[in-house]
Image (cartoon, helix red, strand yellow):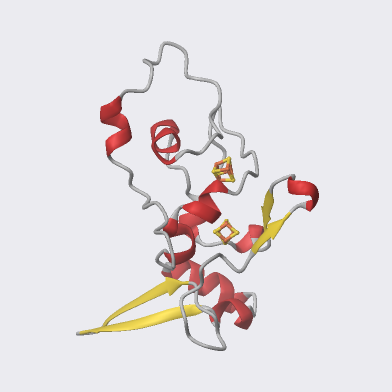
Length: 142
Ligand code: SF4
Ligand code: SF4
C-alpha cells in the first residue's frame, strides 16, 4: 500500500516495540495467503483460540516447540552493524503489519518515523494526540 509522504525507515520499531506486531490478530486473508503459499512454518506459529459458539481467534506468534508466546517476531531480520531491520516474510506478512501505520497521526502516536516531514499546514503534535495509541506498546517482560 502506497501512502503519500510515507517511507519506511526499516528501523524495526513497530516490529520490536509495538506488541500488536508480534501478538496481533491474524486475518482470514492471512490464513488463505499462507495456505496457498504452502507456508506451514508460518501456520505453525499461530496461536488458535476457541472462544466458543464458533468464534475462533488466531494470534501471532508462538514458539511451535513449546507453544509459548514469542517475545519477538520470529520473522524479523537484523541488518549488519545495527543498520536496521527487515521483514523476512515481507511479501506475505500479516495484514496488521502491512496496514501499519494507518496514517500520519497514527505514526506520530506510536513513534514510527516514516512520516518525517510534517504535512503542509499541519499543527504541531499536542498532548491530546499522544494520549490514545491504537497499537499497544510492548509490555516489559521479566
Ligand atoms: S516504525 Fe515505521 S519506519 Fe520503522 S520499521 Fe515500522 S513502519 Fe518502518
Ligand atoms: S511479520 Fe514482518 S512486519 Fe510483521 S512484525 Fe514480523 S517482521 Fe515486522
